[in-house]
Length: 228
Image 1 (cartoon, helix red, strand yellow):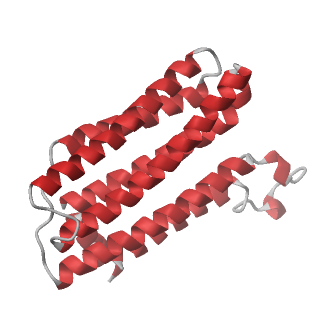
Image 2 (spheres, one colour):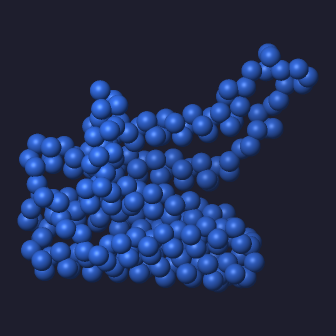
C-alpha cells in the first residue's frame, strides 16, 4: 500500500501545483483593478493534458504492481533477481532517447530528423537490450515460472516494454507524416506528445529499477514511517 499511497500523494501534489498555475489560488476579491479572466492564465494544449492523464493511468498500473511486489516481499521474503550490468546501459539508452525526443520537440528545423532518428534508434536499442537481459536471466536459472521475484521481474519489465512498443508505433506514425509533408514544424504537436510520453516512461522505469534492484527499500520504509 505504501507504493500506491506515495504515488497518489505525488499525483495530488502535481495536480495542486498545476491548479495553482491555473489561478485556483487567486483571490480576485482582494485584487485591485480588473479581475483576471481564465484566458489570461497559461492553458496547456488539450492533447498534452490528455497525454498527462494517460501517463497517470499508466503510473497507477505500475504503482499497483509495485505495491504487490513489496507486499509479497514482506510476507514471503525472497531474494531479488540479480540484475545484469546491461540494465544500466539500457537505462542510459532510454535516458538518451528521452533527451533526443525532447530536443526534437523543441527544434522545428531540419535537425528534427536527426533528433528523432537518435531517439528512435536508442529506443529500439533499449528494447533489444531488455530482450537480451531476459535471455541472460533465463540461462542463469531465473525463468518466468521460477522464483516469485523472477515472475514479478518479467511481468513488470514486460508491461513496461509493451508501453515502449506502443510509443515506437506512435513514433512510426510521426515518421510517416514527416515523409508525407517533409516539414517538421507541422508535426511538432505529435512530436511533443511522443516526447512527453517518453519522459513519463523514463520516470516510471527509473522508479521500477529502484524497486527491482532494492534501492527503493529505504525510501519506502521512510514513506511508511511518515504515513503511520
